[in-house]
Length: 257
Image 1: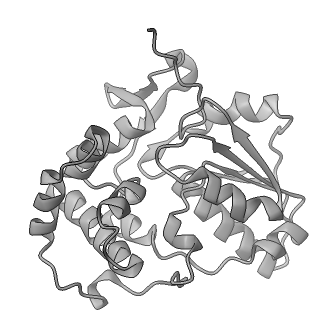
Image 2: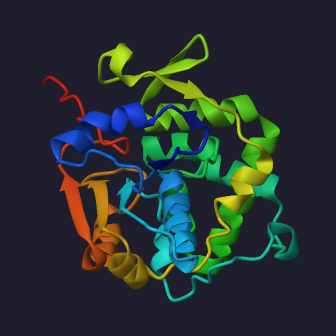
């Protein structure tokens, strides 16, 4: 099995192992699996293996981090370097304006440190701009947040995913810590940049050449637009839409009245 972790994570496959088994997916040597941003890496890995005529088992995407922008007519794979696509706006001013917006509490908190998980909220706040402009500003804002305070970036990231940190290990806030322990992992800045250098993927080829194409998404994922992902990917494989789950596909604890 080839497994691709989410950005800043190690050992996160342990979170999904029982879920996959419950659905009858016991990974074998030829399977390719990825979570969140790692799901995009899994797709690109599968595509490369197919191109080189290597055997591909099941391709399983767990909460793939597709942005709304990926499904617009303006999206162009193999995006150019951020440095070669300047935006005439001071990023510090943008960040301050986002903090001062009169919006919902969760969106305000999300914009104080812009992580790569925040595009949907970010784009809503800049809905008056063209999607290409919002997309490029979003990428620059992420880079800005990462450079300014890497520790705060990761702290915000892990909290959004539903983890708490103890002694450099992370534990799910929802389940037994022994079963859900994963590890923090600080990525290089180039790795963050590469999240957006998404190469062209022919999903029809993956559907035809892989043993099976499977997608797991949470119905009310606050990080991605699960309906849009389902609408665009379900025609190529099996798409499981899990109710009452978070981005890490774990059950959300119901708040008591």
